[in-house]
Length: 487
Ligand code: CS2
Image (tube, rainbow, N blue to C red; front, side, top):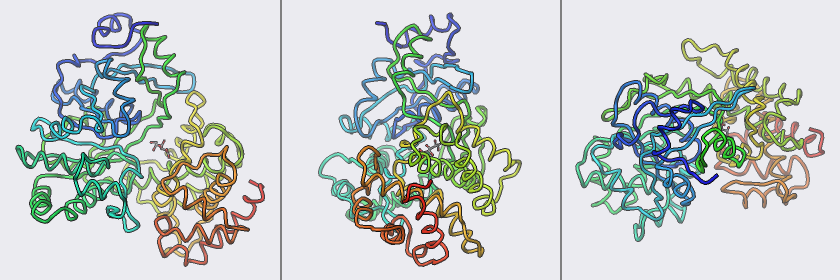
């Protein structure tokens, strides 16, 4: 197939009726949002909601400038396509496709830093969103910016263009402050606890590390002109595959190098705290609320926590996909009990949310046979994910006098996975502190030793959990059979 998806193809695609196309003319959209971290997740989630909102509201101000941070791969895929790409929604017995046209500009920050700063400084841009993953925030053990990280230090020193996400964000805000100083909203769209507050603090820490004459005024402007709402994002979006691109090509009649596949379900809850205008997201089903914390806890402690549990136990049992893991009755049972017995009692349930239906929905979504999502993908970056998904639950239950046995199983599964991956190159240990974890695991003779050595990683477990005998022994009890291969 020689043709490629592009604006010129839209009239033909509209007539063909085989895929949905934007309800507005993408070329007429102005750029009102800069997004840092242009992975599949943004393309299948925020971009879709934003497109629906803009179409429903007849508002042409909310095109997106997507910034790719780590390589120019996405630029090569999307620029020749005028920023257009297909989102395939794969559900049981269901495949639908839509072409998304929100992405009006695609920049690679590594090659075009000034263009990125110019966009962030542009008065017409009112929102900067981020999906940079947990590790992309480069937080230290205290949750603030890790100033010992050489990349962060280089960005603060400012000899060359910034490389870290926070460095890019702060330098962009600096450019804006120097240009118009127009208010702007910075919105976190990662799976974090209080992501808005996290970003606000990282930005403040970065400013505080700058020479006072530079950082002081910038911090003052940020204080008055920038808002940092949190948001809760939800859609399962595995890494795009050749099969996704082949399906997109079949439906489009032209190639689409930027196609992504996702589950049909999607949800976005946004803290309604904006420094300036925003798209009419409520028209697209986005929940706008003063406080996202209850939604965030439900999602991280039910969905993401059981996702991680299934990923580690599933990979240890040789299940390649999450669907296979949840199809294993013992593992599904463990996920269910983690949600029901440990996580649910810690939650303040948002109004109108049926927790039992949510729990069922999570397991059904994981079981989706049409969307293969690999256990090793979800297993990635455990040192960053565990504290957000499992350890908050563990702390709350321990404080209430209960032993969180299923959260302990999740931690033990991670430890067993680390030990297996350290010994077996066939199992990937994709983690920013992989070396440290491998070193800890390699020297451990048995479950108590392995647990002790991994519990000593303070950025994961803090100082409190390793000292809580109830929790450490619950983990060791779970870990012992796992290490023997009885899973
Ligand atoms: C997953 C999430 O990668 C992971 O660890 O748990 O990406 C998950 O698929 C999304 O949060 C679903 O909204």
